[in-house]
Length: 105
Image (cartoon, rainbow, N blue to C red; front, top):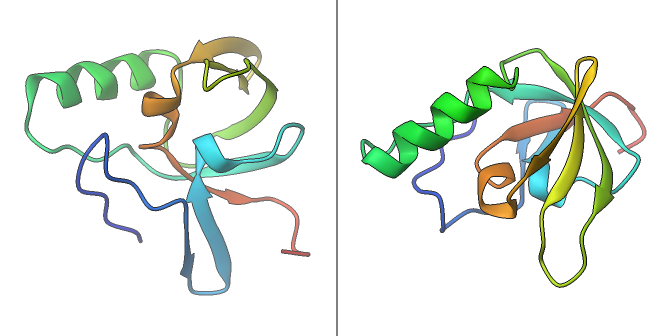
């Protein structure tokens, strides 16, 4: 799918096959998407913590997600994951790759 190297050095979009894959952090407010792959590991304790937190709240491959609000000045995102709503730091959202459900992109 798409390789990601670290929590801080992330591209915002890529093309995989016929899908436009982007980070959850770059998903527009109100746009639904599907998690394209589980968050990557860069073998650091911080990466393991982020991956564990994301898995606990349901950020898993194939899960539907939607950004419903964004705090100003680079603050956290409110993200609907399954039936729950969670606040995610933008750094956490930047390691989650998603593709839009809509085919018009």
